[in-house]
Image 1: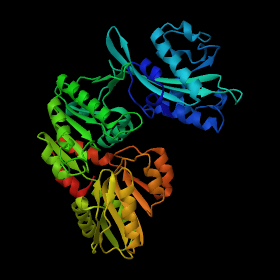
Image 2: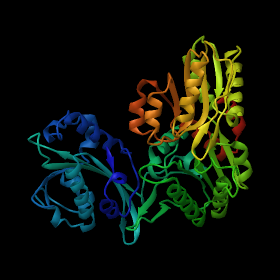
Image 3: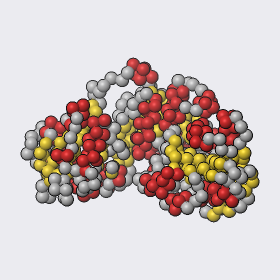
Image 4: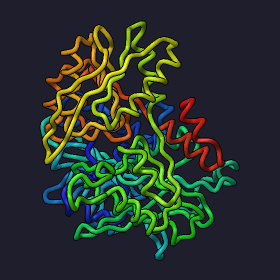
Length: 504
């Protein structure tokens, strides 16, 4: 599934009311996409006659319409005039797209169909419909190619759903009384939906608009005055946006919430960027952890929630606003206990800086397994991009060695620690890391490393190339439930310490 975030800049600019949405949020659109995928069956595109819906899926069938491509950029409506009217205004079978009543909607759809025809893949987009200067609806569109001869793309199937902002379904009494507003920014919508589901809430709609020169604006689409707002956005760099871009967008959104009268704004950043440089190791070194803290404070952030920051002491001391530090240790322990069986275990720190993290994890395992767990650590010194240090201390012989770390970037630290464990007699080596922030070279490094299993969380979306390279050695653990429970307790003034002790 391609998204607007991955398309050419002209197409992105046209959708002047755009929310990133990597998967359809409406069940009706999800069903349409599933039926298209099943009907495609390896061909260049699905045939329309091969896409069918059961009586229980009538709602999905009623959202679709079909355009047959004409020479140039024009197309003719051949099916689903009532569904097409959501985008194009009143229309009939046989109408050309160029003659549509709603010129703005027709321009949006024309660009979508052009991308579908070019890429041969489904495209998903969102925009806000405006009438008389007011936001009236959030429209979600799924467009997918069709081919009647199985060789050329000659038509497109489109499904659309409009969520009315005026007269929208009422929230449940518990939600209405709570005053909680949960937002997910950028490509974090899928993770945000998992958090919302675990929380028993819904994501609050927002507008994320990009201008022609790469600048953008972002704002809530519901009233937030007097509400307790939570903005979920993991700040890793990827092919769509850098860490700095995402940080800037989050800060702008927090500012918009404060200006709109939010009673309290909490930034939920499972992965906090620029937190690895937390002290000066060379003359005139920057201390970026403190600089990031000053930016959040300057914009008016009331609270920051993170998972397994690089240095918890530096994190807690850098911020003057409230900070909440979560960890994935309970989740990792649960997975290790379930899969390790009766194996003798040793917990390994890949460097002295992470020894405290490893020791806390070892003590947790001992407590829950009710048997001794050995410990070990690796010496590491990084300078100017080079990692040195060969000292290994501890007992891993004939044991399951579990290397615990906060993140994996280049993969070199994980690979060299795994190799040291093997050299010292470890029977198996597992790596448990909270954040999979993989560089381009990490796949090759980890593919050849003596690692039996790599346990990661979904705090950072995993690139398909990494998942493919690791294959069945990869185990993913979700932190959505942990984040949801933390938000629930923070909103109700509950105990975070108890959450970390017991896990979600």
